[in-house]
Image (cartoon, rainbow, N blue to C red; front, side, top):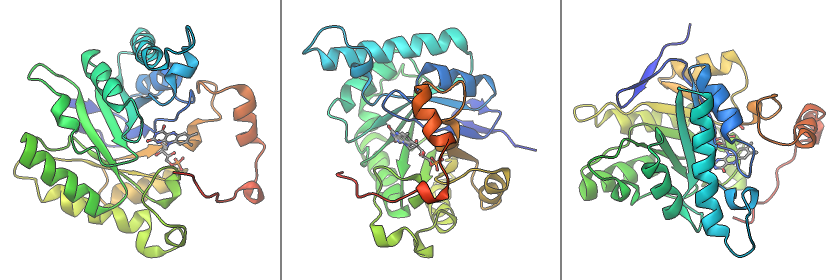
Length: 265
Ligand SMILES: Cc1cc2nc3c(=O)[nH]c(=O)nc-3n(C[C@H](O)[C@H](O)[C@H](O)COP(=O)(O)O)c2cc1C
């Protein structure tokens, strides 16, 4: 049996967060389907201007328009909890954060860099919750300390991504197989930071990266995570917003097709 948890006053009935997947992989279709099941559906803000291209040269405006459209569509399809994933590394990070807050989306998930100034975008009437994505306890600590000192605000939850989450994380290639950097090791470390603030705020910790079975979910819940964030597993679903060709590559792949590539970021 899954246990619900809270992000702010919002109860998340199914402790599964669908990871934001750009470009165009997780939009309103997948996000609303997950939200309708009681989990958190997440729209990725990465590259929306490519999908909502109106006329050449207006990429930044198209991104804002695209995000508004995807939020509107997800609200049409679901009354559940919808988040927006915004990478700190995006050149239009501020635009995407402002738009998400103005549109009153439930949650911002911000990673791929330290979102140190994220609370500065909130006003007293804002409803959007703020959830940083980290890949170390050190990053979690820096964010909590800076947010508290500068904005008197603490994260509403923290997502911890282990090396198997891939993407824009802080791991070196040699860390990937090193047990010291495993998600099983990271979750208790990040929990220790989160619970050190328990007198001020309950900060749920969400585990991500390589989670693909019920056993995996149970393992991280038993380690103290309130929920899990899952990406890849959602790609080959009917509800996923990716093209069928993209999904078929996942479906037709086997273990021997997997390789680690060096990311330019
Ligand atoms: C196709 C794809 C695109 C992704 N795009 C983003 C993104 O735009 N921003 C982000 O923070 N994480 C991104 N992620 C990471 C996911 O949100 C999630 O943390 C990760 O996939 C979890 O690991 P898993 O795929 O093993 O479940 C992406 C993952 C995939 C598979």
